[in-house]
Image (cartoon, rainbow, N blue to C red; front, side, top):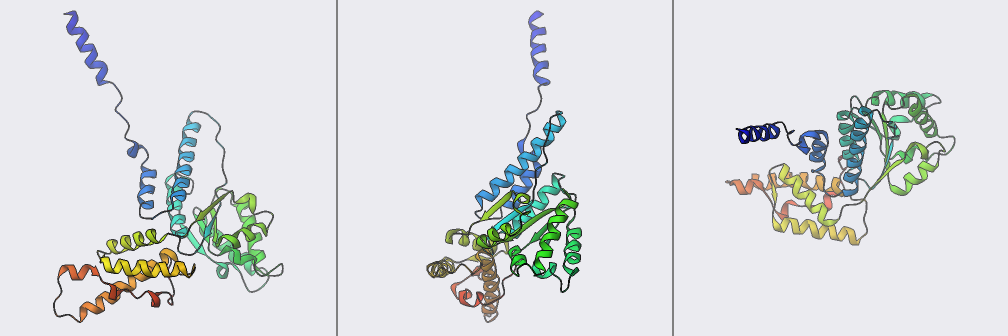
Length: 306
């Protein structure tokens, strides 16, 4: 009888043990963010940074619940790198993360450049800049080629836009995140152009150019998303063409942005080729061949956002 009681007690104690926590379920926000990042090739340091931000915000919640002090960090950022390296895409992912974590109530991204902020007469620039800031409240204001705001000198209206942005960062503290983006060297000069800028942008992320291998992975990913496939010979043609650009030290062909345009053009040329055939099978409808790849003509066309 005593042995039976002991066994019952053991079973009962096991039954009330807390169920193991599923990490992915507990951190669904980060898991969702990882899924978005999973569509990006490379950018390992950027991905590590996003994990750091998530961890800091999540642990901050636990500290507040435990009655501990939590500090409010400045989250305005500078993204540096060549066009087509994923800056805009990462800004959108960060917006989604901040919305999920309660840092921003909307998480949308307002993309602007110099022409959107700088006006034609005194006072016009401040008005235009404030309007875009207000549109970005609750989300992110992303200024591409931000260094262009300081190119005109002291009398240029771009300086007025910078001053208005600095003031807005104080007036709407914690209500929006400002991300300035552009080429590395130009952005370094720009940040030093105003004494109030360096301390307001403690987060500076470098977006490196993609390697040839990474660009081929991006081409593969983009074709698969559209239910196409690159033939081995088509992929070899892209690799050889990219290698020529590297040897020419051409850093203006747009990185992943260029690859996207190349894939989209290849799909159109593939359609033209098949239109001339009487019969096509499923494999033909999916396969991109070398003759569908026209590397030279893509570089002369306006490149879409990536």
